[in-house]
Length: 216
Image (cartoon, rainbow, N blue to C red; front, side, top):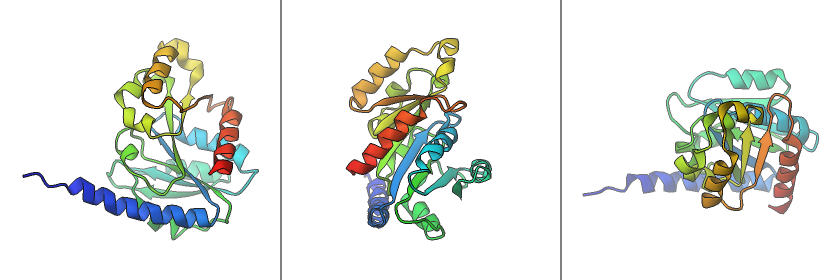
């Protein structure tokens, strides 16, 4: 006999995620759920976007990690309003975690909210957490096969950020193969190359996010 526990877990999570989303939207807070593998460049991406979007409206970050607050402390040192969730082993953030941390955050109406999910291309893709949209970060150093191996993360993301493009030749990254894989699961998702070290490529992504917010 098969017991559908997963459905019940998802239903409870999704109900809380809907509540979170409605509450944030009522305050004109636009929320972006950032997915990606460990070391893909999620924190660097958020840092570069904060430099650009922070001039438009206040910006806050929720950092999700299995353990440690290294990234949160790094963001705070740059003057970015950042809050930490340590899951203690869980491979993804969920709506109850977000609801709990939001109760302790002080965000202005009209803010940007970025949620850096756990470094993982599997579990985080399965859970909505109250976001307006997901974006997935993929480093060229990870290889060009990621859309084929982890289709759900790419299919459920509104855009793809391709980081460390300066390493593409050195690591033999096949961009055509990557784009073909993405087109097979998310044909409408744009790709934004981004050099996290220099910030090159961040402005087109920031402009896209402004438009996504305007259209929401």
